Length: 594
Ligand code: M6R
Image 1 (tube, rainbow, N blue to C red):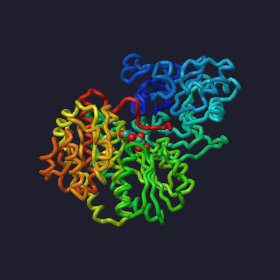
Image 2: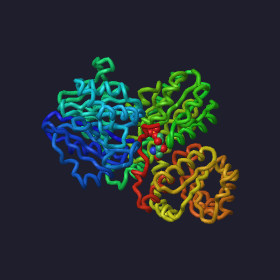
Image 3: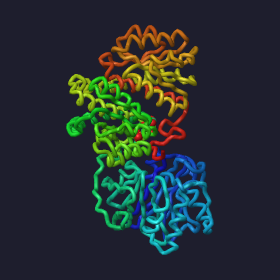
Image 4: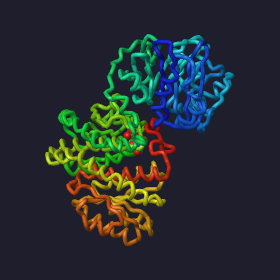
């Protein structure tokens, strides 16, 4: 959902190579266009164009710009098509101010109309362009850059993280945020701004997190943060424990396949959160209802949580899409624990819901990105330990979310047996990954399909939904996940000769009924690809293909292991089709608009 970066170097060295390096690390946030603005000897220099970073760099040589401070942007288009004109940075008429922005200015049309009447001329279709014009207007009225930005945010409505430079106030970047992420990095060679930490890990790991409405001023001497009354705020400095290498491909072809391969480690590291989770459970007190709130993949992890908590702890549990949450707000009370699951901790729908839930209930965030907005606004936090996830398709963060949820459910219900089973998961994942070549070959054979179905019962139903989501988002093949028992209530009509049906069928209570559903689709001509136990001979006889999982993986923990082949199927079909799995079209890693 757009990424922004800013940097000012202490010495007078060229900043463009650093800006380019940092913004390249945020390509997962938007790949419609890229642009940089730097300042040197009284002028602002801009290079920008539509297209992926590599293409634009090839054309414009983005690292070759003068100046020791500047800003940069990658765009996920909201207002105006991906084009050079709509690319950031945006400027005022005489290029005295340059601005990068992540978010949406909801009232931009009325501001634009007003400024046009005052003589301002706009060149783009973006909402962002009103920002440099407003800053220019206030600087013309003799406000300095900081106060012109302050006056501007009094007018604009919506979500934003903004960084601005002015040629009339050199050696300074002014930034602010509301409902879009922004971090400030303090490095040895300079000071940095970014939408997300992977951008600046190589240069700075001491981080400040500005709050909504605070104004950040960075210059060669350091960082100052002002609150809305112009008072200096003494911000805490956190140190990120992620390393720059963690945000690199490290020899893999894509981040997605690297991250799939890191899943055992993600689970192992997240298991270290057990004591923290126990403390939260002890502290949270009497809970009569649990509500999970999330989007996308995190929603599927939450659904697994409902099955676990209701069956093990007997606490009524709902799972609500964050974007639909407000309709349930009246049902919350102080005995409800609302659990927000989010990889990024910055998803706008989830943040809006969190603000609502905080008014009545206890709130817990299960989040991967340290210091993100959900971690700062939820009353309790469980930090998943997946490390930075760059691929747009969530993989290792999903298993890390599941690990936290499993620990939570097991500790809540004092289920020692389940705790023991969870400990085995990393080895089961690694063992499944040993079959990667076999899964790759199978995936190639399913590349022909236009539609896929994924079936699972009980704990395997959310896995079916997640498998279908992975397929849709990166292969662009239509995939539907269904509760296996539901198929006969309508969708069975869609099953035809050769249509692939992926059946998730671990050994356990649901096995026999799922097998009946498998036979129903098989007898109607479906091509059945089953994910089941390695010792299940009957499954091998009845399916076209079987991906075998260690027979010791019990149904209850199957979601943590059976998802691995589904991720791989989506990945290898995508490769076969020649798409980029890390940057699926129309999507972005962090969805900061509602
Ligand atoms: O950062 P979040 O977990 O809050 O993001 C929610 C969804 O946008 C996200 O899970 C999305 O569905 C996945 N990237 C898809 O793989």
